[in-house]
Amino acid sequence: MTITFCGHSDFKMTSKYDQILMTLFERLLSGDKIEFFLGGYGQFDSFAFSCAKKFKQAHPLASLIFVSPYLKINRTICDYDGIIYPELENIPRKYAILQRNRYMIEKADLVFAYINKSYGGAHQAFIYAKKLGKKIINLADI
Image 1 (cartoon, rainbow, N blue to C red):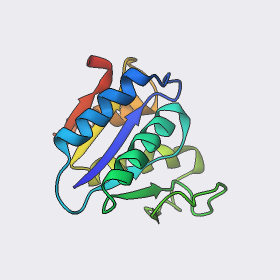
Image 2 (image 1 turned 90 degrees about the horizontal axis):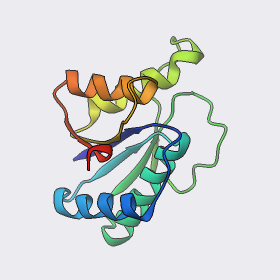
Image 3 (image 1 turned 180 degrees about the horizontal axis):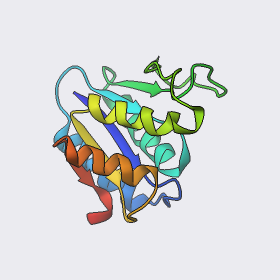
Image 4 (image 1 turned 60 degrees about the vertical axis):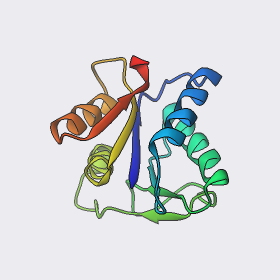
């Protein structure tokens, strides 16, 4: 099962949302192969990574995968189990994150989101996930 996330970069992490997401993980995620596709930019991505990492501690077969929008990575990625680059070299750099997000949505079986605004890249990813008929859980609605 492949899990991905989309949420606003100005998301405010709270223990409430941490508890909600961890509860949802335990209730919904099963099977031997759980892959978390993570973006690594902005506050919601940091929150998603933190929760996925906690889940992995209790479920060592889970994998944390950084999906990079750029061929050259300018960040520390040692906490991830793998890296995927979805071959975006022909995409203008300013659109790379949007295209990377679409890739993550396409590959996902389940999308966890925090969308409470009708604009921005996270909102575009959310709309794309709906268009593809993906199973989505929007934490902003809980």
